[in-house]
Each structure stands twice: as C-alpha cells, then as structure tokens.
Image 1: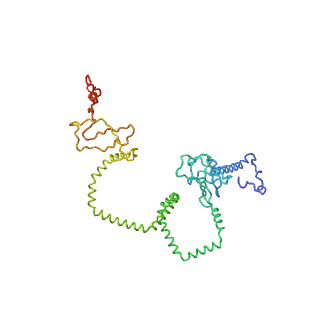
Image 2: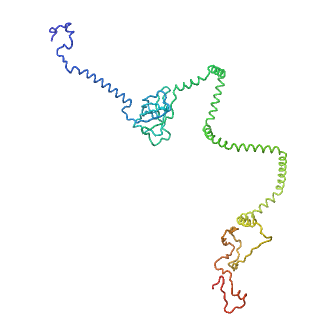
Image 3: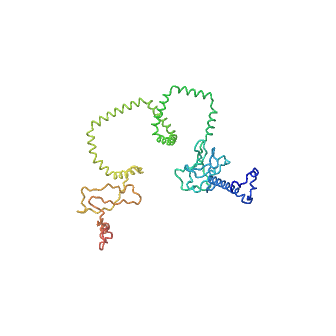
Length: 421
C-alpha cells in the first residue's frame, strides 16, 4: 500500500483499546504466557528448595549418635559440623538439656562414614577461633579398637573449649576481690622496683634461660624421679619408727662413748701395744711361719681329702659322748663272737702297694632300724667276699667225741658249713 492510500491517523484511532483491534482472540490462548511465567517461578523455587535441602543434607542417609557433655558451650546450635580429624562427617541434629544439667547432643553421622569411627574414639567440643561457632570433633585414639560405632551409641565428651565469656567471668570474679587502691600500690611498687633496672632484669632473664637450658636435658630423669618419689616416701614413712629407734640408739651409744672415753682411750692404747707386740712376733718369725705353712700343705690336703670320713667318725662318736652315764659306776663292755673270714691265700691275696680309694662313709652310727651297711670292697689287693671262699668249717663229730667220748659207729658230721652233706 502506498503512502497516498493510507488512512490518516487520528487521535481517536490512537486512543482505541487493544481489544477493539480487529482479529483479536479472547480464548484460552490469552492465559498461556501467565501460566508459563508461573511455571518458571515454581521451577526456580523448586531448584532453590532442592539446593537448600541438599546443602542441609536432607537427602543424605544418616545414623544417630548421642554425645553427652557437662556443657555444650556458646554457639553450639543444630546444624553445627561434626568432624573426624578435621574432615566433616555429619552435623548436629539437636541440642538438649538433661534433668541433671548436662548437655545432650544428637548427631547425624553419614552412614557411609560411620565405619571410620572406632567405638573408643575421643570426642571433644571445640572451636576454630575464640569467637567462632562450636563443632563436635572426633579424634582417633592411639590404639583404635577393631569395633566400630553403632547406631544410637552414647559417647562422653572429654573436653569443651573455654569461651571468652567464661574467661571474662572468672577474671571479673578475681577483680571483684581486689582493692583498686592496693592494686595501684602494688603496681607502683613493681614499677619502682623495675625502674632503671632493665639491664639487670634482662641479664637475670638470660641467666634463667641458660639455667633452664641446662636443666631441660634432665627433665625426663626428673619426671621419672618424681614418679618414683611417692613409693620412696611411702617406704621411708613405713620405716620411720625404725629409723627413729636407730637414731635414739645411736644417741645412747654416742653418750656411752663420751662417758667411757677414758676407758676407750685405755683400750685403744692397749690395742696399739698389742699390735706392736704382734708385729714384733710375726716379723721376727716370718721365715719359720712361712716354712710351717709349706710343711702343713700335704697334711691339710690329706685331711681335706678325707674330711668326709672324719666327719662321719665324729658324728658317730657324738652320740656316745652325749649319752648319759650308766646306773652303775664302772665300765660296761658288750662283747660278741662272730665267724671269721676266709684266710688270705697266696698269691691272689697279696697286699697291693700304693692302693687307692676314696674315703667312705657307710654305716654311720647310729644305724637305722633293720639297716645293714653294705660290704665295701677296697682297692687293697684282696677281696674277702669273692666267689669260691669256703668260709668256716664246723666238725660237729669231733666236738661230740670231745664232749662225750668215743661213739660207736661211723663218724657223723651233720653240720659242715661250706661242705656238701
């Protein structure tokens, strides 16, 4: 359309409403744009809500753990971090107060990280800074247990970081008991004491530092001595009565020595004189005494070799020496006759020259009941108990003829020891 055929615009045409324009549709399509805008707003809200829920950990599978503490401290709120060796493994769900005044913290630990905590893990409530928010700190022990934490397990907190307000409260309680005037006087006296003495004070600090440097290597030994000191003190405390008794006795002995000092002087003088005489005697006879010692060596060696037999002999004589005397005066002798041994025969029973044999101690007196000492075969060249000895022969027929005269008939020898028949 050319400009010449266009209808001129008028004020009425410009002020006409949009709905009056020809071809305008007032159906369902007129609400499409508001619906699209509302959907976009809802989607943005849903995305933000999901992000917040994910940040809070609402979609994470957690396991409840309870921590009991004397106090929770300031700035301990739900949502506080739960850390293991500095890494976050969960959050604080709730903070409650128990009837006995303790703090009960319900923790939400990530299920996948619960296996990292042993059942003897250390729990502390701390903060990164003095004014910072609190967090629950898990610390691995030196000897971790093989068992892990279980859901719902209750732990005790060993330590809670001190807050600034607690420090101020304690400082305020201390300052409340201090008189400002006396504090001013004390500070003035300290100022006057240190005024003009900076060099001396610095030298003192240097000397103290040097002294501590020398003492520091001995601190482990000092610590060990302090650990053993209670046992040592207990031992001395137990022995204190005996020690006091010894001191009292020592006092008595020293007093006795003081009282008898003249007698002690005489004893010492006599001892010195005896020592001089002994030196004179021993010094004069030094050679003969040395020769005598050399001559006694064979005798002492032989006595030492046979000391066992000598000891047995002395023990056997001892009962006779200690036996009470008999009822009648005089000497009582008990004699008995025994069969003789086989006579020595030539040449098997020749005595042996330089025979040897250790000392024997068999049949020591007094003999036990029904005890027979064994027969000893010595290395002397003969053996009276060897096989083949006939022993003693008894001719009973000759004894009967001696007693009763000749007897008719053949000789009768009914008892011949060692002979047949």
